[in-house]
Amino acid sequence: MYKGLMFFFTLFLSGILGAADPLYVVKDGKVDSATEKGFKVWRASACERCHGNNQQGLVGPSLIESLKVLSYKEFVTVMIEGRNAKGMPAHPHLNKVDEGTGKKKVDLLYAYLKGRSDGKVPKGRVRSFEK
Ligand code: HEC
View 1 (spheres, rainbow, N blue to C red):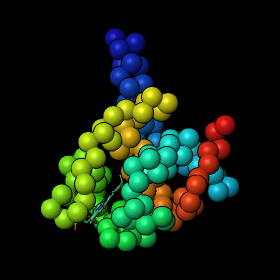
View 2 (view 1 turned 180 degrees about the horizontal axis):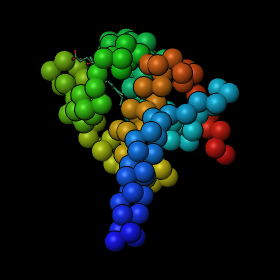
View 3 (view 1 turned 135 degrees about the horizontal axis):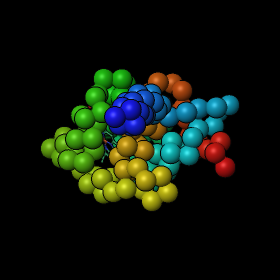
View 4 (view 1 turned 90 degrees about the vertical axis):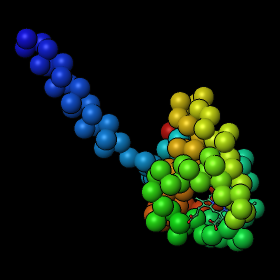
């Protein structure tokens, strides 16, 4: 009985700790490795072609501003389904899991862009402090 309680207590605690997991970490101008991967996904997907090198906006809107407003769910929907009629292509491949981090590419991208939008993640090529 006592053991059972401890088990649930541990689950409860890890739930709380898990929820406190930050989206991204920035230290001395460097980022955690998942956020660096997010930047690589950004580059590999050539988002800057329409949203600008530093997410400031070109034919597509500024993602610095958009990410202040969009919910996580809205972000995932626009990424995976696109808004073809309005010039935003679908990116279904972003549903794939990145092997190095075990996270979906769309989530890596979200963390990176959220950090940019919050003004915490520096612009341009970011490097990880984890290696
Ligand atoms: C061919 C040009 C093009 C490319 C490439 C592109 N986008 Fe877009 N994107 C747009 C346009 C145009 C819109 C505005 C659609 C609208 O009016 O609703 C948009 C909208 C968005 C939105 C929603 C903004 C909002 O405020 O509702 C997000 C988020 C976004 N793009 C992220 C990305 C990311 C990340 C990539 C790279 C994986 C990318 N886009 C690639 C053109 C592009």
